Image 1 (cartoon, rainbow, N blue to C red):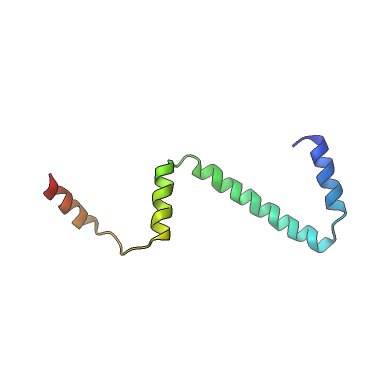
Image 2: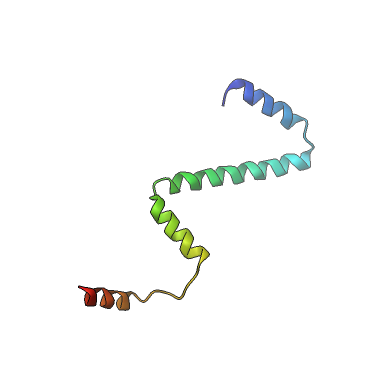
Length: 76
């Protein structure tokens, strides 16, 4: 962040009432947390992110891994 931006933010911050400063602090914490999550998921392939989101949005009964392996072996 450049010096001009810091000064502008600082001036705006000084004009806020204390109650809003506290709320702003919480919002900054939230933004920092969200940014850290985005950095963590940047290494996860897009297809895997999509798969997890799809499963989260469309819950189904749990997968039976042994049955899945048996079906796979039958196909071979």
